[in-house]
View 1 (cartoon, helix red, strand yellow):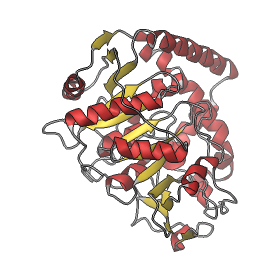
View 2 (cartoon, rainbow, N blue to C red):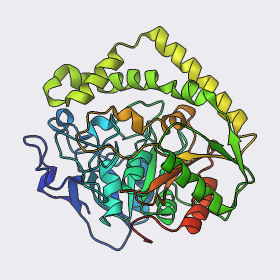
View 3 (spheres, one colour):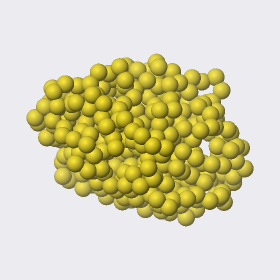
Length: 394
């Protein structure tokens, strides 16, 4: 049975931030896989804080697990804790003013990435075998890229988000995070019992060119070339227009998700987070309707693309992780990830070598709807071709 430590007492005081990977550590027993759960996801008997003081001060212990935990429970997984995150999952750096910032295990000067920061750090440091994160605009893939680990954004609607504190319900997804691809497969088997992956290689891979660091782009090219796949250059100007159609809908839905916290406890929400939420308040009904039409066009564009190629490849992030405390706009970290959320399609990311850099590059592979099995098979080929990430084999 799960037993929260004293750090789970949220109703009167916030926990200390010396242990910034987890918001709540849990005492467990047994021999099942160790699972870290992002503190957006309900775990019975433990408050869900969403990394926010405003929510933590009023949070009651969850009366039931989120449905996405059912498979893990049945498999005897040991939930080791509720992992830290960017406040209310609304940011890409992972910096948190209330619970501290999870330390990037590759370089503490760099952000761990968000919003699933603690989940990435937990698997990187070996404190969990698998972690659950959520991905609304890149929140599984960005921290995986920043910390040199692997992550899977699942198809919208494939894994239940009931019992998960919402950010933007149209785009919210739950997915596994791990050191390597076998860990992702194990994580999907917990989320979806019976999930398996067989050997597979794409007949044609679309290579998308986007702005970014040329060294990262070259690292992705080298990794893809090592697989022996047939690569087709893809022109996709809609990536920067239709693919970003989600942004207005995302902030409008985020406002609806968290407006009660802003209206009742504005001083208990970080400045950057509250500014984003208030931007969503300004979205008009007509503008949101227009943005949803753009999203539908984008999904049609992707459908046509995946009739020509079986998979799309590009860097997960086109830039290096930001420095902790950087004043730079963190949207630069999600430029290559948000369009997959807009489309509702799955995407997997794995680290690939980037000689001379503080962190490896990260290769992102995007597939058609419900192609997680094939994406993980492809990711296995990449990992076999270039070797495991900086933390070695599991």
